[in-house]
Length: 143
Length: 184
Image (cartoon, rainbow over all chains, first blue to last red; front, top):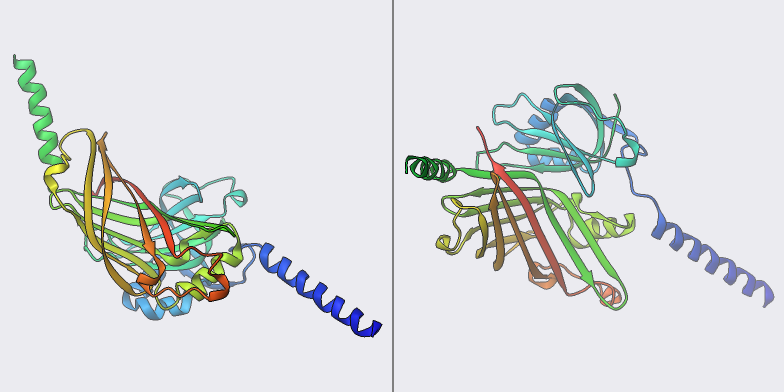
């Protein structure tokens, strides 16, 4: 009887430990995930514009290292968002929201950069005015 | 007298410039808040695309579900996998229009209240909405903001009975965007 009680106690303890870990586990970020693919900003953007559904299935939440030229940046409550220009005709861009505490030195506009981020997907421009946007988040600057 | 004509001329020119222009941002905000006795859940997305035609009052908003950031990684996982099915329905989309354009004067600095009506698609299910919005015009910017409520059931978002006490049936949504001129 004592043996059963001990086993039950340890199972409960394990369960509580697992639940505690699940509740407090850290968010995935480009720093913690293995790199899935290396792409230029233009190539990544064109993959999404030519087949949005297929590309989303390939890259969704995957860590992608993107190289490109920085076009602009914006700061908000969730971090710093960098915009990389592409050579597509519609003015489309690739954007990366950085994990703020990991990135102290930011590149300047016009710099060539290598950045990693988890792919969140693609926003098409249905109006034809703006160009689409491939979004990456939880990103880091490689160099 | 000439001076007055000059000032009026500048305003008129400014007005004409603004009319017929599209304003946009790729850094718009969309946030939601679920409050129950058991738990408060909130999430924010600061990478929302807003495009507004100042002549017609048409507004297009697109947000990626996987870009909503939660306090806990587990909440974010559940949101994307169990409720939004983000791999199947990656976007939230609103397409609408200012109901009565005479209530908003984009030619003149000021704060304007107006109703916006349109279709909001979440979880692959569209539903018509009419919301109260505020437009602040000034300094070459239009800041648009609205708060409204979304019923999970209206968009076929199913909450397990075991979590009914943790997730509100009706969610408070806040949308805000600082729009600037789209130059092509």
